[in-house]
Image (tube, rainbow over all chains, first blue to last red; front, side, top):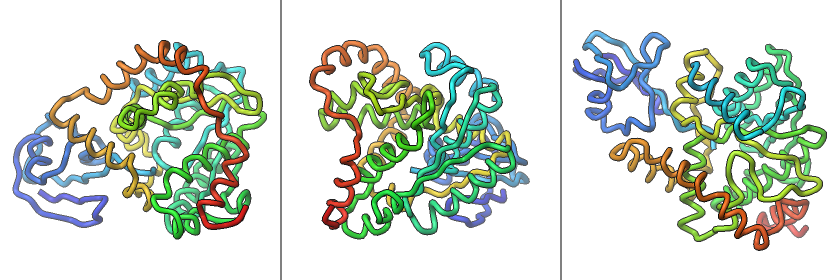
Length: 64
Length: 263
């Protein structure tokens, strides 16, 4: 799976077929702090992702 | 999308924040919360003007304010701005070089300048979301600042004071995550950047702790806010006599003193 991490501004490739929540767990990211975006839509944590997907992980925390 | 808009609409109506006849100044930074607030209030038919405070944070605020100016221009929205430098002669960057963490002084100055910008408006709406409020409640509890705690809520302050514009929070029951999801769904031009000074703040520590807690106790933040809303009337009553003075012109002198400038 092609993953772009918006805060770090870097791309990583991870083998993953499963839910969005499982992906974030694999990446050690607190699901409270990010959204998973696929084709400009928000992916619910319980939705399934496939290895062919390309997603962006964007930080929820911004500003301040 | 409907959930966010309905929640904002219900908060405005049920808490009597303002009406469609009112002139509303919206405290804007170009970040997601205030831009979503501005966008929804426009959509709901309110008479809004964007109000922006430029703290003077190189490489951060200049970029978000440029984005805000573009948004306002493309939506034909009036925008009023005021900077720390205009009012005090120094930027937050200069202040932070002397005083760290800079967030306390910055927050007071921002509220002070926003209040100045808000003169002539019936209310100033700010983009504080449910996460911000849960953090604020916990921060005040942990520091035993009960008077400050009682002054927070969808309508800030305990009593109405002449010269101070009502400050209201229509996003009070919308989570930070819902705000960001809404921004993405309607394609708002939102910066993902975080204030370079915020990461060192007490608020950031509480925010991270609450996010860790939320990950294992879903709904924890909402329950903190709901608990507070239940006890707030009693707290307000108890604290009315003890509440300190609201943010005043003295904030500029205080900011300058903390920056090492003789005011």
